Image 1 (tube, rainbow over the protein chains, first blue to last red):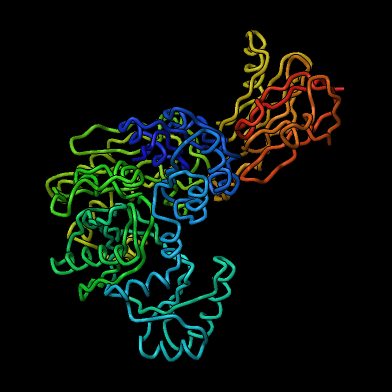
Image 2: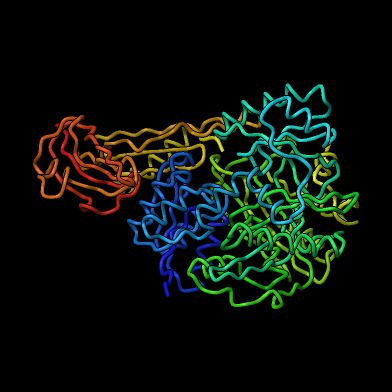
Length: 447
Length: 152
């Protein structure tokens, strides 16, 4: 049986620190591959070793799979953990690692490739009996017109190479179809190197619900419940919770089963997330896409299941069995996470990089904070603006929300602008308090 | 926090009185590189970071200078990229340079391999190789010192 002894962490910020900590608890050594500007960051300092893989811009460091594999080889690591973002869903990194005998902590390259092709993933989901929205691939304007008639307007034009909210256009009526279709095609070709498009019915009032799955290399697949991530701005999630509120029991069971069935059908391995859009009027769920990585919001699932998901990723990557069955997965209480970002909400959510003159987080019962920030830390302008994730776990939703509000109010942070005030107002908002909101709620509420 | 001329003078005075021979400070919006002796001092003022909705311009790309000076008059050649450091074109071949070798700025001093891609590294300075710092066939990090050169 193989045993991972040294992990190369190909990421930065809070998730790099999270992976380093998980490895340390398992007795695994870590090497953090950092850009020049992150060499003094917490993850680089806590790891057994940090190597500078390149200059600050991600295109010259964190997005270079060749440098990552070379650095992992040169530091004699036997596994690479890609975290989220950057190269986490790069089939090239996964296959390159495999070619050099390094374990990639994630699904096989073929699965990542299939999941990245949103059209193929949709077709596989339908084949596995997972509900998908009415729609399909369109090769020409004539085909699109015919299909659009059966779907009805408004509808979405989506790029097969998109995902995560990218490459999507809303078509309100037949007059807009042809123009938006050709625009979408040229944009998709330029952005993803893949011009294939498909149409899908648009759900005006939708909730974003996703199911956490885990599959080992021995054929066992379980789900770890679902999360609701409907509080978003421009497809960027802001608040996530588990379990999903206001989901009727039949729909809850349906998406959990569907996620496992889909994972089984595509030969999924390791941790993954199957995303669904839930029509908030009918309660019907539809498959959206699958994410082949640890998610930013994984701590809410950890809180309610009591399981360390990063440790589970490493265990599966090591070829070991899950070690528990579906019946062993029990959910306890309610967990909510909010993302504290260095951004200037008043000025169009502009990123607000800078040096933290003050950063002090409160200690409260039921509160967990995942952060790479500390007084004096630099929030560089090159990467995303996530500073910290605050996660509250309590017996019920209201209690968890109250813990988060108290934590945000007690937080001391100076040196950069943050979205703290916005988070507090959302967490206390009547609409949000009364249950699940829809994905466009936040943008309406903050106007 | 804007830095006044007086602040800079104060910093220089403190450095002057200290044991330090070289100091490099790089923080958000401020970078200072001071070398005591004939190196001189360079202090760049902080780029203005007012509340104007100017986009947070990333700092201009700063490749590690291939060659940079220091106090003993020697110039260091840094790794322009992470990779495996090779002193010769192939195993068994003589090294590109050794201690005592004369180099011109375009003289190839080593190869850095990244996934079978061989990248030739020029000296970037004219002079005589005084020290080979990095170990052959080992990983070098981005910006790591490779050679020291006595400038011509």
